[in-house]
Length: 202
Ligand code: PGA
Image 1 (cartoon, rainbow, N blue to C red):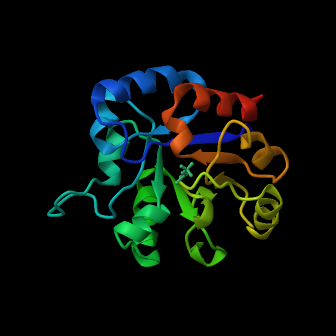
Image 2 (image 1 turned 180 degrees about the horizontal axis):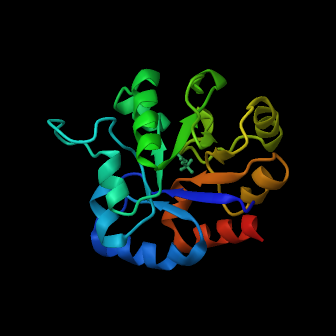
């Protein structure tokens, strides 16, 4: 199977015009692109950064999996460490989100930084191992350490995430044995992101 590369734009960019420019430059790369919610429908993106666990109702500010599905979204990131930190998401909430996404037919990408965060009773389609020390720090995890971790995660499809760039991208797939990448900062630079995708898909 081809490696899967997922772009997590986080809370970027500032305008729809910039989002369109970036999206148009990377949309044919074969990657999953996860822009902020407000840009999803204009861009016709295939990924989202979060989802709520109820489908409709009095949940101010939330977005449901059925809404995402009806917009053509296929993949959704769940339990990103920034949401665990700033929105105080717990494993319990994350499990509810996973269940809702799976029920709706979205493919959840469950982010973890420890094995204990993998739920026992639900099978997320895709896991993303994102060591906290490497997320958004420009300090990528050592490939040797990543390889050890990959061996310990008994799941068929695991992405690596954390300071991925065009220099180190291929080593996480070819040396550490991951099935793909979750890319943050480097996904905001079309040239750099295209290089990353090319380095792992070829
Ligand atoms: P980063 O982010 O590539 O900027 O480290 C990765 C992520 O948080 O998914």
